[in-house]
Length: 195
Ligand SMILES: Nc1nc2c(ncn2[C@@H]2O[C@H](COP(=O)(O)OP(=O)(O)OP(=O)(O)O)[C@@H](O)[C@H]2O)c(=O)[nH]1
Image (tube, rainbow, N blue to C red; front, side, top):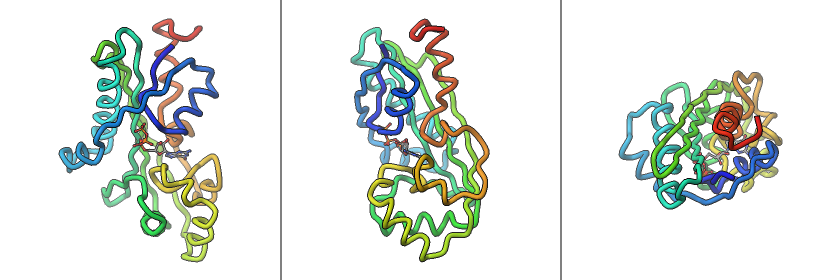
């Protein structure tokens, strides 16, 4: 049994599908505060730091139970980092900014034991967004708002979000929210899942 330090439905769904025995405990890390304190950091470093904070915070009170924390960040080609949209209007703005260009989605995972990180990995996917008309964005949000309010990048790739893209490079799992294959590899290595 492990602890998933997350309230992300997508991360829970990934572990459920993979047959991982876990308990979900939200980490409640002040992500906005960390992002402000780490202004200028690369998306790789920022997602890794946030994943570690989530895992270590929950692990501090989890005794010997391994704790998995994760974080995903969208980085536009101009370096802008996008958070989860706080309103339908902000989602429309994000989609318009992503339209016709490519962006990166970084997903980090950190496993902690006894309050200390013992394993970490960050993966990057590159997503190419086709030109999105204002009419399409409006009809897409009629379908997908508020479901995508919990999704950085304003899409559920496993749902209608797939309509946004002309090409995707990288792992589907990275986009969903964590480098799952490598997480499973470590769980097997430590005997927390059958190998
Ligand atoms: N279902 C789905 N969720 C996505 C997709 N892309 C990104 N996400 C979610 O976007 C969210 C990124 O925000 P984070 O700050 O990393 O995580 P969170 O949702 O706040 O949850 P915590 O792990 O508790 O911090 C995660 O829940 C990801 O699973 C996608 O294509 N489909």
